[in-house]
Amino acid sequence: MPGTEWAAYYQEFATAFGVTIDVIGPNFGIEHLLDMLADSAALATFVGEQTRLVWPANYDLRRVVVRDPTPVYPHSLIWHAGNPHPTLATLRDYLRSTRPTLGRPGTWAPAW
Image 1 (cartoon, rainbow, N blue to C red):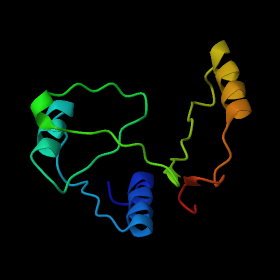
Image 2: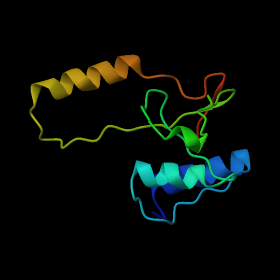
Image 3: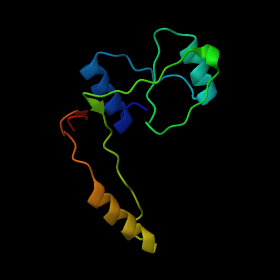
Image 4: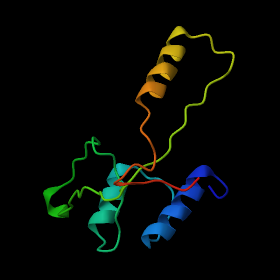
């Protein structure tokens, strides 16, 4: 992942908030991640507001809303220039019309 947009995001995020981000390990799935979180007092992870997670009650995990600032990621839409699918234009128009303004009060996004 070095040299990628995600690596740049993680680096700037870690610097801004004084945290360490571990991107080394393999992904063994959500159950393994929840096991790791339950066994550690030092680990945390981000999940989307609408992500549904179920874990055993004895894990004693908590979800905490992060705000002021709320970290946001500047997503991109990529498509093949020759894609004639009629819904693609509709999707692009919709995303363009609902695009949030980065840097609005209460949010954090990378400077780039």
